[in-house]
Structure formats: structure tokens, C-alpha cells
Length: 500
Ligand code: AMP
Image (spheres, rainbow, N blue to C red):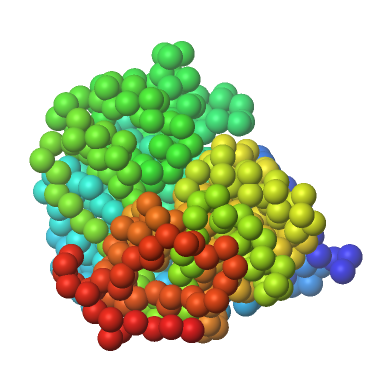
């Protein structure tokens, strides 16, 4: 396919922003897959590496972009999606609006008219759950802890109230600060701000590491009202005297748990120490690990809480089995299953990065094509691992929870929870990686003695018992846990026991 080029891009708010200088000379192109809501070539973005993570296939020399740029309803699910793969769009169970929105209207949320107009212009018809719940709280100036994941509409949930507050008196001083763990996310948020602030006279820009700081410094010097930043580059520019945070009135910490996973917790503390005590803080995180709870206890003032459950409907389409196995036998069991059952595309979850590495190494030694992704891997190493898994050159991907967040790989046939998730919500995130496109999926859970309580918590959350697997090697000799009631701590409910 000589006319096909793979280039980097990012999809956000229904737009594809391309970073490919050749395309700016008016070359006629046709997109293999069209995003909805129009296609925009952003002349400001000149660094290909910015968008390493996402690939778009573009076929040159046919038609003009505008001919095909709009397809009406948005279908893109999640902020960063690979386009170039029609299947992946169909698989998520309908459009974004179908999946995440409520019945209420943006007009009900005390947003000013032209902010409502801005979201309507993008094509949002109803607020998502996290938007419906968070926006009124944030508009009152309160601190907020929102448990919501990527794809829930959280960017608008914090951006719209922040814009409403800041645009009342834009002065070109940083009054809104959004901290994001990765440059991809920072770019994505800043791109969304373009849409959300369409009719608001505010200036915003983004700063992140890995690229020259000069254009970023120049942009900041011009005066911005909202800054989107990754922690390292922000601290760098602060220490060089280019940025100061004294005027910040609204501070958003996005994907706080991922920041923790990426080792940014100290940087975040340093940044939060620089911010005025009166500053409104909006903290968004998919999960609430202890460190993040501690952080919020320390810095947030009487925060309101919003929690958006991950879609639990996935639970119903997945056969989830539990194997009782001692810790030291888990790898033997894994190998047995992978070999005997000839699993095709398997995602394995471990609790620690160290274990993810170890398993991937051991499997490779056993002749199974495996790789690992976790927060300590560089962006390019993660991309490589993901691409290998997507293309099928590796059949097993071993991941930690946060690294696997938002992972969009089609046709994952099996999830193996090598370690049981200690937060029951995480279990739903994990198994949601399979059973896409209306297909059924299978999840295997390896449960050691000390993990029995996690099993019980998961079963209570999903309100069903996992299937107790029978007849498998390396089964523990230790006493297996009884089937507990899905409601109470004490009673048992053997009737709902399912065996296979
Ligand atoms: P986020 O969770 O902010 O990363 O958003 C995920 C995706 O949902 C993005 O493509 C948004 O443009 C889209 N989105 C956010 N809010 C809405 C909404 N109320 N209606 C439809 N799409 C939305």
C-alpha cells in the first residue's frame, strides 16, 4: 500500500489533529477512518514526537479532507484512540453519548449560556454522569474529589467550571492550573480547552517535557489564564523564574493515581505547597490509593465527593473463574493454562511493576511471546509493547493496573488476574479489557490465601459469585474460602454457587 502512511495524531473532542508538515502544503488526502465532528489540521503543532502514542493511517492523493471530514454523530470512545481501525470504534458499545451521558441537559448545570453553546457545538447533547455531578459543585467554588476514569467525560467536568470562573476577569495571569501525568494527556486537555472555551476570551497553553522549552516559555510569557502542565516541566520553568503560581485560583490534579504510579508524588506535593491555601482544588483519579487519600486529606478543604462507577454491565458478558492456588505455584498454573488452553490474546494483571517484568521474562524464557507495560517503562517502550500486542506478534501482555488504563486492544480473549485486585472497582476495569464488540470474554483469577478477602469484596461489588473452577493442577491443599453472602459478612449462600 504505497500510498498509505502512518502518522501520529491524537483524537480529542471529535477532532483529529494531525502533526505532519507534508499535509499542510495542501496535499489532497483521504482518511482511512474518519473521526467525527470534523478534521482539523493544527498548524501550531510541529513536533511529531508529541503524538508518538497514536497512529492514524492516511492515504494520500485522493480527495480533500473537507470532503470526508464530518460524519455526524461522534463514535470515538475515549480521548485517545487509534483511528485507522474501523473495528475498534464499533466495539465499545455505541457512541460516546450512548455510553456515558445522562438524561439531563447542560443548561441545568448553572453553566453560562455560551459555555452551553460551546459544548453543543461539539455535539454533546447531554452531560455525562461525572459532568452532571461535578460541575455544580465546582461552580460553587468547592474542593472536589472525583473518582472517574478516562472516557467518563472528566475533562469537561473540570474545564467548564474552571473556564466559567476564570473568564469573569481574564488577565493573562495563570489562574487556572491543570496538572496531568503525561504530555499526551496535557496536549489532549489543552485541545479540549480549545473547544470548551470557544466563546470565552481566555488564553490557555500547555507545557510538558521531552521537547524544547523555548516555544513554551514564549507562549507563557505572552500571558495565559489557564496552564496545562506536566509536573516536571512545570517545576523546571518555575525554578527558572518563568512561571509563578501565586495567582492560581483553580487547581486541577488529573489522573492523580497515575501520577503516583509514575513517581510524581513528591513533585505534586511541591507544586501544591506553592499554591495559595484559598485555591480551589479539583482532584480526579480513577482509583484512590492510600497516598492520594493522604494527599487530599492534607491539601483539600472539606471536599465534596463524586464517584462514577465503571460500567459494570461488562461483568455480565464475561465468564469469570477463580482458581485457588498458593502464591509460589501461580506461575506454574499460568504456564499450564497458557500452554494447555492455547490462549490467543491474553492480558495478565499483576499488582506490582516488578512482578509484571518477572512474568514477562519467565514467559519469554518458556517460548511464549510476552511483553510488559507499567509506569516505569518509557513511553516508547510501552508503545512498542502495545503495538506488538495489537499486531499479534506478542500474544501475552503483562500489565499493572494503571498502565493498562484505557487500553484499547481488540480481541483480547482472556484476562488473567495473576494477583487479585485489592480494590474491587479495579477488577471491573481489568475485565472490561475483554468482551468487546459484544463478544464474550473469559477472566481467570488466581486467588492465594491472603487474597480471599479481595475475592469476597469483588463478588459483593459485582453482586455475583465468580465461578469456582474444578479440576486443575497446582490447586491449593489449603482450605478454600466458603462462598459468602453477597450482602453480609456473616451468612453464607451456597445456593448461588456455580461450578464448572
Ligand atoms: P474524557 O473522559 O474527558 O477524556 O472524555 C472522553 C470522550 O468523551 C472525549 O472524546 C470527549 O469529547 C467525549 N465527551 C465528553 N463529554 C461528553 C458528552 N457530554 N457527550 C458526548 N461526548 C462527550
